[in-house]
Image (cartoon, rainbow, N blue to C red; front, side, top):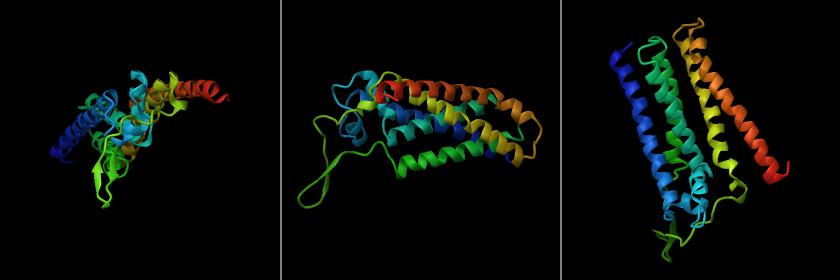
Length: 215
């Protein structure tokens, strides 16, 4: 019920989108230029990897996939905030808080647990750790070097992350006691879009499993 706090939350949602977009753009650039001083790049790319596989290597491991997941969440959050800037005034502060709380989980993971920007280091004889740049990287997992795997994870994540929006509106409806059908009508398209992406992801994943694994 504090307009300044609500406005601050809206601005923070958009600011988080800008920051995470900057982070994942930097990670993509490091893959493109084959900067093997970064441990994540060295583990999931090499100099001979085609450009499209270098870009898909961004989400080829745990650190990058969590950053990519968190980035998509900030996109959805910014879109929701901008689309509903002057609508659903009772629910939107709760919607923003829930989506940003979810985003906080991912940003905490990025910073403290699975940071994709850690440098490669080696131990000197005295035990000290110093930066080290390998001549080449280990390359992308051969099972992921399939053209559909360039688009399958993003589509799957768009579906999974997309359901955060109806979840946030559902929780906001309960917290704000706006228990009519407004939140259902507001999130119907969001739900259908997320459902569509998940359906396409199942088909692409099935094709990948058939070609690469013989299932």
